[in-house]
Amino acid sequence: MTALFRRVQPSKKLRIAVRSIAQLLKISPNQIKRVESWAFVVFVHRLDRGGQFISYRRLEEWQNAIAHHIQTSPSLAELSQLKTSIHYDSRKFQKQYLPKTLDFLKQICLEKQEVLEIWESLNCIAS
Image (cartoon, rainbow, N blue to C red):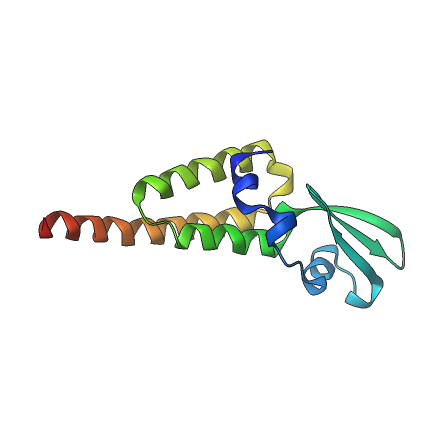
């Protein structure tokens, strides 16, 4: 389990939408009987195929949870630590990350970094 996975705690905190699983699997939501959030994966009971495991990292909810952590980072130091965790996690589990997810997270990080740099420079001026 990586630091990023411990931070997000997907099995406890993510609310997985059947719609997003269906979209990922390229099937109709009607073909999904039940979704179970396990400690490290999601188990999807399908009507057409039986069961199927899906990594949390492939879900839109995972991307949104990480984006939330980025956007709520209070300092450049914490953002840097989070970026390091994302980089390590995405390299270790690169098959589980979609390229568009990594591009999205990089963009959010850059935007937040710009905001924090401005904020911290204003704090230095005020001191």
